[in-house]
Length: 358
Ligand SMILES: [Mn+2]
Image (tube, rainbow, N blue to C red; front, side):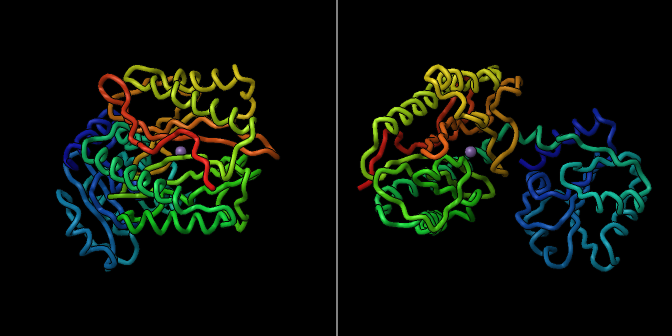
């Protein structure tokens, strides 16, 4: 599987006339190697692959990283000196680097020490990562399953009078107990008026009757993220709360039917957005409909009005419309969807009918 991924990278390198690429960020480097640690480097040429690390990770790299020559740079002093020697030996002229990950100071260091041209990779690996292979999809499905089980548990656990933080802690503890390596991101637990904050993290606020409670969360399983949002009501909803909830739910489900190969991402966004706008709430839906999910919680493709590129089988994206009304509250409903050969498969299985917690 890593061989296949590296093959795809080499095809892309060849078309950009790159002799080698240097990968320093965890997602790309680990996607192409199977490594699960950090602070390491890989240098991939058109016919060789080197995994370069220090004594903290050498043993782990030797166990996890196959098809690479594992090298330890520690004894030569600095990584950049070591890399300079390697690049000279391999006669690299054009070296691709991750321009969104390498810091300005690192770039300066490479620029002044490496005898080669530094070429921005322009999302070369990210573009390969956009379509998931079977192993990746399995991991994402497992991460989604943990999130589903956690939501089921939380519905029974949450009671009026608890703080958002108590809810967030239980959610984290429960997902980790089920085997999650970590959270995909700090969980969003936003109740009452705070539910109008699309990214409101848990606070000491007490959750009261008559309020919305939005839970947006996910976990990492085998290096892959899940992402799901459900909004519940504590006690009974008002007429307006019910109205908003049903609009968001309808928008979410209308869009769900549109995930299929060749569908422009912008068109799926428009289906949900136009529906919400037709109901008079368009101004309260400020963000894009969704985003790719994989090793990173937010990755390509964006499902938004600016992205006219077409969906492909094997993409995994979130579908998450919302309505957020300041000083009132908000609703978001989010599922993970995988684009298949002939449609979309919803990976989040939690119920979406309005749940009232007493
Ligand atoms: Mn999301």
